[in-house]
Length: 542
Image (spheres, helix red, strand yellow):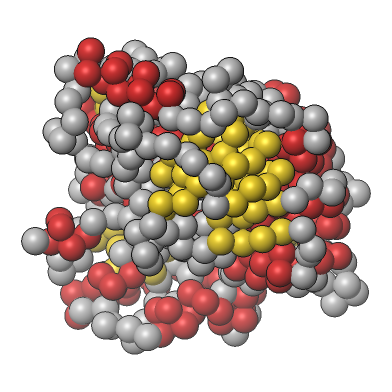
C-alpha cells in the first residue's frame, strides 16, 4: 500500500528541507537537546505514564496502594485458572533442580549457565522456544568494550536515562558484565557487525555519550536468540517443554518456591513441576495494550510472571513505569506498532513534522523523544493524518542515504527495507510515518544483583525484573540485561539448588490471596482470569 497522493505531496516538504539539514549535519550542527528541566516538563505534560486516569491504586498484595496501569491492575486483582482448595500437586510430572519459566533470551541464558554449574534444568515456555520479545529486538546491545569508552561512562548514561531512579547496584552489575557478555555471545556464534579490519562496529543510541551499540543488521535480537536456542539444543542437562505456560507457582509450608503448575495449550492438561529453585523469565506486558496503544511485543507478552510472583508474595518496583518506543509504524496500517529501530536515527534519520521541520533532537532518551512526538501530534497540530485517522510524524530515512551513500539503507536495515517494500514504499527514497508504540515494561520484581526476589528460592531475569532501568530504559540495555541477569540468576539458582530442600509444595499462598481479594470486595467471575496467557483479539472484534 503506497502512500496516498496527499501524503506524497507532504513528503515533498520533507525533501525541500533535506539538503539544508544534510549540510548542517555534515558541519556538526544539530537540533538542540532539551535541558533536564525542559525534558521533565515535557514528560509530565505528554508522556502516557503521567495520565492520571490511566492508573489506579492496587487493593491487594505486597504493593497495595501503588498506582499502576489499569490493565495491569485488572489481572493482578483477579482469580486464576486453578481452585487452590481442590488442587492437589500429587506426584509431579517433572522433577528438576532448576525450573526456568520462559524461553526467550533471559530464560535461555539462565538455563545455559545453570547447566554449566552442573544443575539439571527444565525450561518451559508458553509458545515455541524463542517466541519472545528477544526476537523482536532490532537495534543492538550495549557494552563499553572500546578503548575510548568505559563501564563507568556506561553507568552514568544508564542512570541518567532512568532519571537516576535505577538501583545503582543493579546498574553496576549490568555495565561491569557487559564486555564479557559480548565476548561470550561472539564465542557462541553471534554474527555481530564488524569493520573491514574485523573490529566490532559500534554506533550511538539515544541517551548515550559513546558509540557502544553492537548490532547484527537490524535483526540483533533474532541473531542472539538463534544462537542461544542452538546452544540449548546442544547442551546436556537441559530439557525443553514447549506450549506449556506456567499458571501458578508452587510454594512449600515455609513460603519457599518449589516448582510450578503448567497448562499445556494443545491438550489443556494440567502438569506439575517440582524443582529446588525457579527462575521467572516471562518477559513483558505489551499485549495488554495499555491505554489502547499498539505494541512491538510478541504475541505471548501478557505479564504472566508478574501475576504468578505477585500472588506468591514477591515485592515489585516501578510497576507504574512503562516505555513507549518513539518510532513505531503508523502507516501502512498492516504494520501499525511495528518497531523502527533507534539505529535508524543513530545512522542519521531525523524526525520531522507536517511542514518538513525538525522538532526534536533525534537521539533524546526514549521517553523524551516519545513525548515530543505526542506533543507534535496533539497540541501543535503538526502531525500527519493517515486514512484511518491516526497521526504520526516523518522519520526521514532517505537522509541516511544522503549522508552515507546509495544502498546504505537496504544493506544496514534489510528487514525494514523489505517490510516496507511489500507495500510499495522504498524507505531509501521515502520517509517512514511513525508514532510511539508500547514497547517495554520498566518495572517488575525487586531483585538483588544475582536475580533473587523476596520469595525464597525464586529468581527472575529479564523484563519481568525491575530496578535495572529505573523509569526509562536506554536502547541496547535490554538485550544486555537479559544476558547479564540471565547469567547471574542461572548461576545463583543452580548453586542454591545444590543445598535446597523444600517441604510439601502447594497453593496455600493462593488461598490467602483469594481471601484478600474477597475482603476487598473483588469477587470471582467479575474480572479476567489470569494469567491471561494469550490476548483475546477475536473477543474484542466480536
